[in-house]
Image (cartoon, rainbow, N blue to C red; front, top):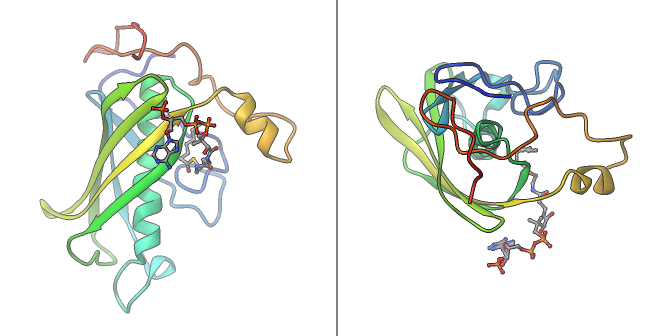
Length: 172
Ligand SMILES: CCCCCCCC(=O)SCCNC(=O)CCNC(=O)[C@H](O)C(C)(C)COP(=O)(O)OP(=O)(O)OC[C@H]1O[C@@H](n2cnc3c(N)ncnc32)[C@H](O)[C@@H]1OP(=O)(O)O
């Protein structure tokens, strides 16, 4: 499955907390491909509140983590978060249209390093880095009490897409 520049990223699965359209408690992130990364707009509300009028930091971290998962969809690589580091530079206000972006900055062996930001009116409120580790699909089926990995067809041959989405060389 090739995702072209600007095209929507399919959800990891329908019930994903970050991007699943079926999850009533989810963030319903809708990402688009942006180069080798992804972007998404997000408006948080009182369901996501920590301090009065401000977003809970864990929700912001979860959104960035899921965007990193969106980068995996662009790359066609199944992987999981091994660690996630978040710099909260400024409080994130509720009711604002936030812009989230994420990209893979480097990969080596099974490891992929990610970088992402949350901006509000062009000011960075939050910046995160993460290490993802590539796994086989059995990772999901062997660790969960479900019948099998309910993923879409985005998981498949790993690739490093060219900007127009046509490339298909392996992620190294
Ligand atoms: C399909 C995509 C869905 C995306 C959804 C959004 C992202 C998520 O929310 S994923 C859910 C949260 N994450 C998890 O549940 C992961 C739980 N952890 C695990 O399953 C394992 O610890 C796992 C897979 C990360 C690594 O275990 P394992 O496969 O045995 O690999 P392991 O040999 O320990 O490590 C591989 C490499 O990564 C490194 N590494 C592993 N964990 C870490 C860590 N926390 N910090 C730094 N390095 C690490 C190792 O040092 C090793 O490096 P090297 O190859 O240089 O020696």
